[in-house]
Image (cartoon, rainbow, N blue to C red):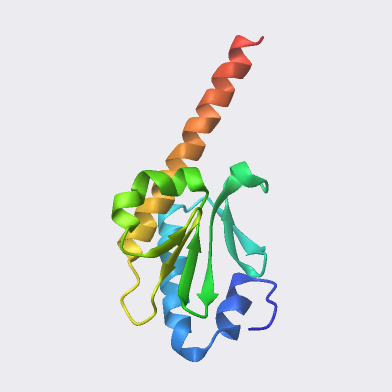
Length: 134
């Protein structure tokens, strides 16, 4: 795939047979995190929270790999779901969904919603610390 400057370009540059999958994953992420910012990072569709671009603002990445669809989260957002994700090939911060099986869109939504909750909890803690420090 050629380098894309937007998620639309990324999807259009993907092989025809994978475009529907990419659109469905994009829709699932957007549904789970409607306020997330969408961009391209490291050549993949990337979603961040509240304009934060560092590791703390990262929600997820996804993209077509040779062996399937890669879905990437922060380790602290993926670890609590080890039982739910055990059937998929995984690494510390990644899952690999085979393209010859239905993509688990409900699982993707759950992972992203939980990541958003962690971000919101972090925002609340930061605000409380700031209030105490005054």
